[in-house]
Every structure is written in structure tokens, then in C-alpha cells.
Image 1 (cartoon, rainbow, N blue to C red):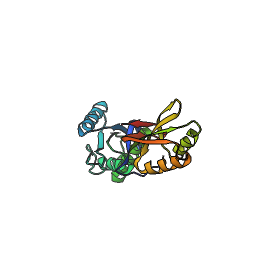
Image 2: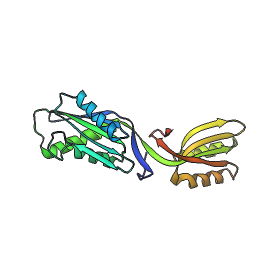
Image 3: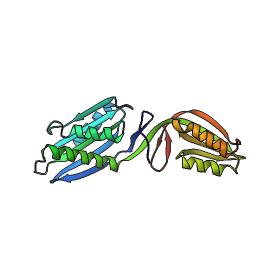
Image 4: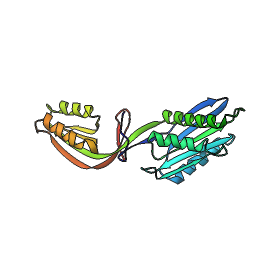
Length: 222
């Protein structure tokens, strides 16, 4: 799904996972988790250190806030700037918010050098994010649409073309659909539906919402 990231649209981790790379016999294991506070991030880092107690390093970074208000990273014994900062830079470049990554390194006996470490921690972080399930978080409106049965096909076609996710549908004397619409799409959607239905469809803008939309167009109001 292609999205323009902004203050009204950013990415979050729906289901954190693990990615791993091998670099000159050193194992780099990246664990990714959604966090909502500094306390949660610190707890995840400490949990990872206990889990991988026998590893040489457990380097980490996290960002908290819709505008990346809080940013922290740790090299955990690696040369300064070779581990925590590269992890953080991947997170900032990914568009993710409220996320923590811990990259565990099991030393393989060969020194990687500054450039090698930066590349390894960057690649491991990317692997962890790629293995995780993400979604886009949008600010928008909940819109209810009522149509007769003849017009519902056109409305659903318009929604599909605009990549608008359906929340619910009810079949009674008419068909009633509720959907989650991004702020920037509200006017265009109402205009297209009004034109397609010759003004017969009833459109109600119900409330302001914040919602998640994943790559399968599944919608979750948060």
C-alpha cells in the first residue's frame, strides 16, 4: 500500500517479530515491539537482555510519540555510533512510531570494523521490521452511507477505487455501509457517491476517528 506519511498518517507495528542476519559468523538478532511509553520500551529492552543474557551486546533504540518526540538509543558496549544510532536511523526512516527494536549480537570471533557494524545493525533492524506486521494509522472520519440495492454496487466500486475500508454493512429495506475515510478523501468520496447515485444515496459524516489500515485493507478503529 502506498501512502504519503505525514502528521495525519504514520506507520505502527501491529505484530512485532524477529529478524536475523549473519555477518562474518556474528549473529545479529533483531526483535521488534510496539510500545506506547518509555517505561514499556525500557521493560522490553531489559526483558531482551535477560533472554539473551549470554550475548555480547544487546543494542537498542526506540521512538515514542506521533512526532517522534522521544528518541533514545544504546550501543551497549559497541563502539560509539555503530549500533544504537543506526538502529534509530532505520526506525526514523521507516515512518514507524511508538516502536522499540533490540538487536542482539553473538560475537563470531571476527572484528567487523566501524562500517561493518553499522551495516550489520542496519540490516538486522530492517530484517526485523520486514518480518513484523505493520499498518498505517490515519486520522479521519467515520461515514455512514445509505443506498438502495441498485446503487450499492457503484458505491462499493468507488470505495474500492479509493482504497477505502468498510467497517460494517447492513441489509434491510436499503443497504447501509459504514466506512473509515481519511481526512483528505472525505470531500472526494461524498462528491463521487452523490454523482454516481444521482443524489439518492444518504451520506452522514458521523464522527472523528483514528484508524489502522493494513496491507489487506483491514480496518481497526483505535
